[in-house]
Length: 328
Image (cartoon, rainbow, N blue to C red; front, side):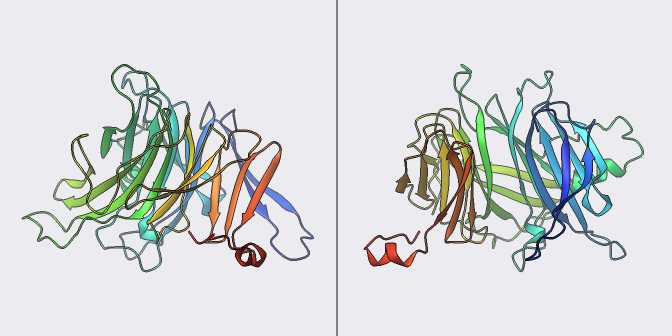
């Protein structure tokens, strides 16, 4: 919520719904400002004797991030101030988690879970979740100091500071840069993941995040690194929204060929990640669309219609018989 409080609920998913919902825990005094992201993660253990952990990640506009143990009713594992005035990165505006180690059959042995934060100054800041967990377990980190970011780069805006905020961020699944090159001495094979960012200026950008395990830890780099560089098999810049991008979604983490965006202009747009083509636009909302979620290939959930949550069904036979091509 706006106060920084987090509540964990147990929902009755039976057909009778006789028990309703039950409040499991209220997490307070961790964040002091608006919660901008909540993501459930499964973090595997690299020790044979330890089990994987179900973790809740939270990020707040006050610049703090936290990890909570969902197996222990949200017990705080670790929190730290990752963005502050000294670092001159502004506020945390959005966040997402790349959690490939929890994907069914889709994880490379060199993959690592990464937390990405978007800031009001146009930067993306990333932390390897494993390093945050290590910091939590360290007896020398009693002041809960965040480790050095694994990656930090300017994604939107320029030095003038006008319209530069990262307003939406989405981890988009496997990347396309080949990982078959022979590693150099002391390093492992490189892996690649997609990251999508939306800006205050209405632009959407697609990035490749390259990860490699070395003797000094996990190295993360972004591509393209300069405006003159281009992506192979991918488009980098998508323009169409008139106003800030508010949300980014995909049909599946296993299919990164298309994605959707919503904006303050009250529209939802579907894009080809390969060539940058805008495939179609959904208009007609009564207000700006602040969030959207794909439930498989057929269902899209949005707001943007006053107090109502809208479910859009793309599998209706009547529409198909009428000649509409709704296959994304």
